[in-house]
Amino acid sequence: MAQTAVTSFTAQQVAEAEKAAQTLEALVARLGSDESFAAALKDKPRKTLADAGIVIEKESMESLMLVDAERFDRACELLFDLVDSDFLITMSSPSCG
Image 1 (cartoon, one colour):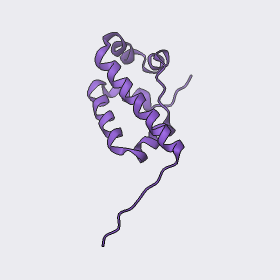
Image 2: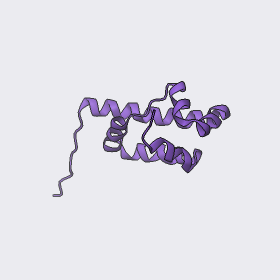
Image 3: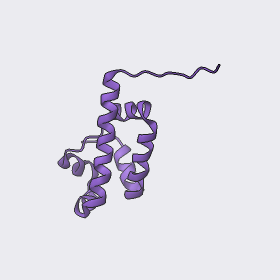
């Protein structure tokens, strides 16, 4: 009889994963429905996200990748369809100010 691996996560990891998923999904929804937000995001991504109250936290994203990798992948695919590579480079570069 084959055994299946059971992975358990802490309540904090699950909560952080849910927060990250909701953040990505809100960003995708906003990009798909708000042209002025999408234009501003292209021009000043960090400021636009901060002004909109959209906070992307590394630890939350890491939790989402662990807890629900499929949901993370779906959200990222949708996001990548809506933004260009310049946005991704800007968001992944360290902030200098």
